[in-house]
Amino acid sequence: MTSLKLLEGQTALVTGASRGIGKAIAISLAKEGAEVIINYSSSLENANKVVSEINSFGGNAYPLQADISNENSVNQLIKTVLNKNNKIDVLVNNAGITKDGLLMRMKTEDWQKVLDLNLSGVFYCTRAVSRQMLKQKKGRIINITSVVGLMGNPGQANYSAAKAGVVGLTQSAAKEFASRGITVNAVAPGFISTDMTKDLNSEAILSAIPLGRFGAPEDVAGAVRFLAADPSAAYITGQTIQVDGGMVMS
Ligand code: NAP
Image (cartoon, rainbow, N blue to C red; front, side):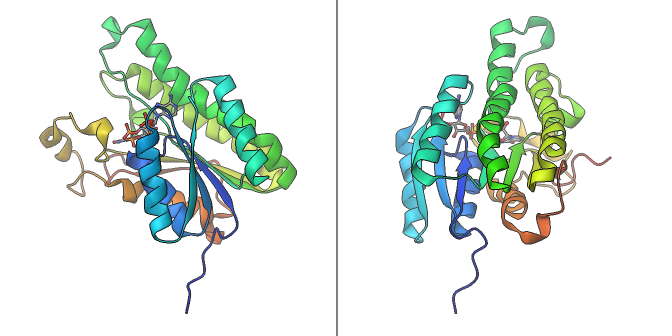
């Protein structure tokens, strides 16, 4: 007996899906039957590897380059997806970078680069898909923020400001789109093992995580899959779900 796939026939766009958390999200949405657009910025080779992995279990995916920090590039990306697929059912705003440094010495360029991708990029993508989702009267948008956006972190003024901004953007978009059946939620990971965190001092961090381990990209993908695909998530909007091993409890 074949199991029911919750996203059969649906189109999902995942930004920054060529590695790390975005890759795990893309794979989990493809396993639910969605055709997944693997957005990447610099490495077509990595994006193609994700597509091959999805094809290997019979899923559908294709790579599309776009710099999510650039408004024109995002508009072109969404146009290309709509020309090919005629719709977008799920948008996962995942692409993100860090450029850490103490605030006193932080270069304006490093502040701006992080804000441009991690916050403005979420706005560009959400705005670009909104017309189509409003027309469809259907859509699920999931924004990847961070626990750092909820609690701050020394050396990450730019990153935590951008991620806190994503929470506010999520709530405003949720209120604007709710009457058309579109939900907008955020997922806030704690420390997840990816390229982004490979140089961190793990001993100091582990002592602050009640579950005693770094998260895996699949831990985050599980929460995204629930918000994007599960019928039980239909009444959840404007929320931020933490996937952090219990690190931040309010
Ligand atoms: P990662 O391993 O460094 O991967 C980053 C991804 O973003 C790559 O696919 C990269 O594509 C893409 N990207 C970078 N710049 C881009 C741009 N200008 N336009 C489009 N795509 C771009 O990062 P990660 O750890 O998986 O993080 C994914 C998301 O989770 C980010 O938003 C991050 O802030 C958030 N997060 C991560 C953690 C953590 O502990 N890892 C914790 C909390 C939140 P290329 O390979 O082509 O460059």
